[in-house]
Image 1 (spheres, rainbow, N blue to C red):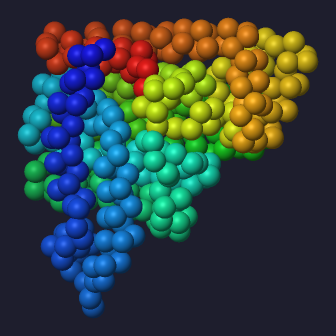
Image 2 (spheres, rainbow, N blue to C red; image 1 turned 135 degrees about the vertical axis):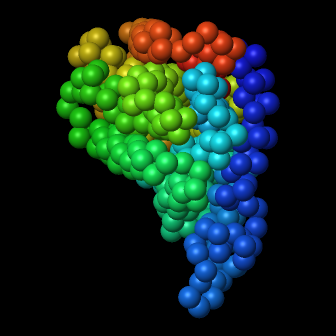
Length: 357
């Protein structure tokens, strides 16, 4: 575990350098021309700085694991791709992810992100939504600017992967919203896992499929490694949900989100689905009551968590996450030649479901 945390830290400066190439600290004339094309009239640099660069850099500066670009790099190494040639594309899964959490926080009316107030709390909803949406599209500029380095069909396939996954993420997030707004009578476990596969799994799948496609390996390999990466994303989401209701004190501070956030939002996590299935009629009624209230009351939040824990839901969710990852890795492992990168990838996969922050 320490090894992988160290490895993520080690790769972080290199990832941030690539991000800064496309998203600098200052909205210079050169960056505006590069990103948006020559203006017909004249750009307002101050506006670009205040509503795009400033809020986004505020979020990026807070940290974050950067595990999606690391996954992109590890898959590239494990399949023998040319790291130098494809490195810039690591911004696609990372910036799309950063955009999605900005918008997610607006939708959930979140309080904290990475230990500080969410962007909409600082800059307003309008600026936050605009900045989040901008990050869905900006990283695709890497594909536009690479026309001379790759065959047209490779870029076309890469573009197709990005667009499809960004379509998918909205159904995942939308389903989650529908459920915690009370649109859930009885959610099946499979439906929950599908929601996770789209909400969280699709950006890790995007990272892996992109790495394979840009390394010009075949489509079958892209699909198989994409499935493995999706499994990591689903397990990561389950682990995130577990941490949301189980961390306290110093660990909670590191996690950087308010305690019991999912309870307050009325989220139907795997643990909630399992508890509702196993609970006595009285406990089930009370749990639903608290979830549907969307209350800030800490006492009620703790009561809901106690009901969830009472039926072994945390242990169950952990087992499901481990099973998903094991099965995903088993499939992918057969396709990868033995190498240091493959070993590191396996370590990395296991870390994501054992992490405590």
